[in-house]
Picture 1 (cartoon, rainbow, N blue to C red):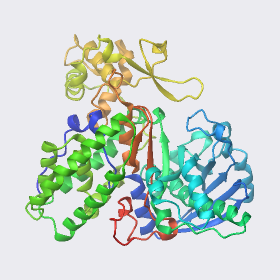
Picture 2 (cartoon, rainbow, N blue to C red):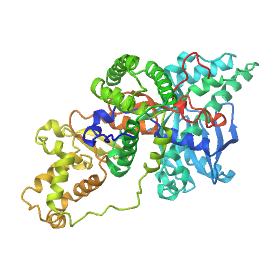
Picture 3 (spheres, rainbow, N blue to C red):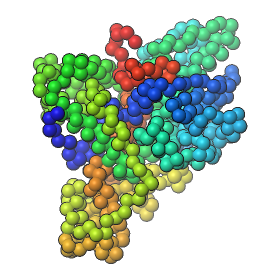
Length: 563
């Protein structure tokens, strides 16, 4: 291995770069499917009690080496006027919970009064997640009607949307009374982040393919004919959509150690692969294969939002440059991945650079996948302020981590134009205009750069030899940010190195970053504050899952290749 440095947090942790990230081998969906296949999990449908109007419940159970988990799905007949992706919605096409074990009839009955109403209901520690989903109405009707008339649905229409249902929330970690993270964090299958939620969505996709087939069968039977069976390849091509708004954005700011661990794992993996001295013919072949397959994702990736249209155009231009580079580059030469990444950094946009950074990991599961073990964080431990730290050391940390913030003119309205607050009605994060709305007194501490600059200013007349404890006795108002500075001093990728309240901040960058770690593809922003994505598109359904298809499913098969 060559000695390649890990990328500098000052470069990596800028919002524009974080908002250009792509899924990778360390994405949580792929971590899950690799485990399910490696451990030979067994899947069964244990109930499907749905009537002709599409109302009822179904249960799908995943049996692991030591435990079983069951998705309980409730299907509803939702009037069109009630269908909304907004967090204030009160009804959905389907609602779900991931149950710890195998539910009894009494559990299903109890949950039938709580899961369908979501926030208006309450669950127990036996439930690990609570979620809801809406149909993509036009595509749903198209698939049902075509199958009911004995035909396969249009792949062109399916590719344009990518999913039959989209989740509007998948809640875990104690929400509505569900099991706290600490109750399950020591289980091997849930040690990596968000594995409960990823398993819930994976089983939801199975339910959706069953439900659409059932509705087509029901309609065909009413007409005295037999419906076509949805082609397995078409079923596999469809994922589960997700509609995500501002509620997700503050997560990265509120969980600095966890965020650091995600980023440090990815950066460590990039560093290790760039350090590879020689690539084998097989490794080069894997890279070229996933490159071509990923190019198909980019070709079919659609968006109507100006931000994403511009980024897609830039990525497609980057791909043309990359093809020129690879036509003459010798990937069999020394340090091929470091050479490729270095060229990308000098020649491509941020979108293209991060695309390449993810792609070079693909041939190297044996080097990369173990980084997933370090991506979780112990939420139970309280980080205690080191009161004996010298002010000089604190000042040096501030200059190193928050130099950009110290140099920002916080007196100008543009630098503090926005304010994060929590809505009274739904207790959800919002981003408002500080000088146009009466929200400042409700502002949440989600501007660490500004707070760090204020701390630096407050230290101006303190001796380098004084202790942090003495300073805090005089200035307790800086306690929260001082603690954060000490955390980031030990966790270098914990902090976003940008102004999160400026007039130019794009929350979509935070959403994109987090969702890329989930493993999302085809980001489709509807504004700079909410986005639609696709999860598990092209993934094998549970009964198809094997060690051979558990990983590279995220890349569609090349057109003309065997499925």
